[in-house]
Image 1: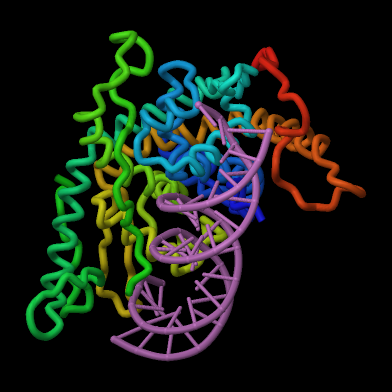
Image 2: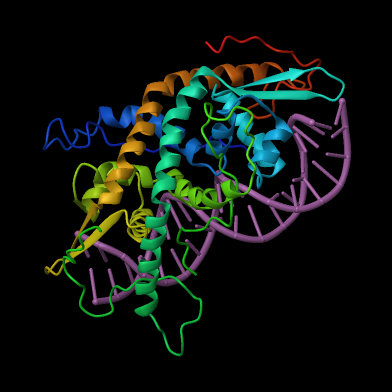
Amino acid sequence: MKPGHSNVPATQAFAGGTPNGGTPANHVTANHVTADCARVAPVLSRIGDKWTVLVVTFLGRGPMRFNALRREIGGISQRMLTLTLRSLERDGLVTRTVYPTVPPQVEYALTELGRSLLTPVLAIRDWARQNALQIEAAQARFDALAAAAKPACGGGPPHVGSRPSAAGVEEVAHLQSER
Amino acid sequence: MKPGHSNVPATQAFAGGTPNGGTPANHVTANHVTADCARVAPVLSRIGDKWTVLVVTFLGRGPMRFNALRREIGGISQRMLTLTLRSLERDGLVTRTVYPTVPPQVEYALTELGRSLLTPVLAIRDWARQNALQIEAAQARFDALAAAAKPACGGGPPHVGSRPSAAGVEEVAHLQSER
DNA sequence: CAGCATCCATTACGATACTG
DNA sequence: CAGTATCGTAATGGATGCTG
């Protein structure tokens, strides 16, 4: 069996209308929403896989050959690059052009659709860039609390996990100003 | 061991400068790029997991209690909702407020950071919505070609996969107009 | 150079059962 | 209600070796 992508058994809901504006108390009739959500989910799985965004981002800078891409990206295995490109090709996001030269030469490029994807994808990437530090800080804080609340017995071996909860009375409405 | 999230061994590159504009032949010195890319990758893994986007989207409509979220989302298992919310809390994207009522009541809400994430996330979701049909069409086309080029021997059992390649001479520069 | 096939480790996720 | 614990399965993804 091929370990290829394209899966997603079937997710349903996907949040319907406008997140705020629009009708305020509109808590979704939960029926027609389900429909196109099922089509949205697979796309997100695609975006979310380990390499798609990378590849799309790089191809956004112009067409590229297989190994060039491989080198630029850095940590990707040949297998995953192949798989990712296949999926993208299948989805109509990239084109694969083979030049029948003596050493075979294959060039990948974004399609129109692929370029349109580039916009929101870069938006996410930039968000990630800008907020990475905040997130790391939040994680550190969280982990610190978790570790503090679970000294278990002796010291504090690197056995991370668990949570500060159930350590006594839950702190209520922490009033954290969301920094 | 907890099956919790937060993994990502270490990805490196992440496409540096402006995707097009800027310096044209700038093919990345591949060094300082590697730095913040390593911080961006985990964030994307988070976005890409099966439920994060869903949860964030729903919470974007206002604070919600555990089971309310569970019901609204639909296909999520209790376990995954817990895990997802944990991760989001750890990342500082949602707050978890426990009200010590007799039946315990926990409310989840997006933080400022979480709301800022909402914007690019909705952008992706909308892109997915708008282009889902094109993608499906592209897939159908691709799969049709793949199936056509691989009748194997007898008929065409449901052994999907593979590709039309290596079936003869590769079609060169297909000139597909990217529809 | 480009890429498929196979093996193998890790992980994500769902179902189920139990707790405060 | 809101979890946690445990189990089993399937998907993800890396390493390696072979082909055209």
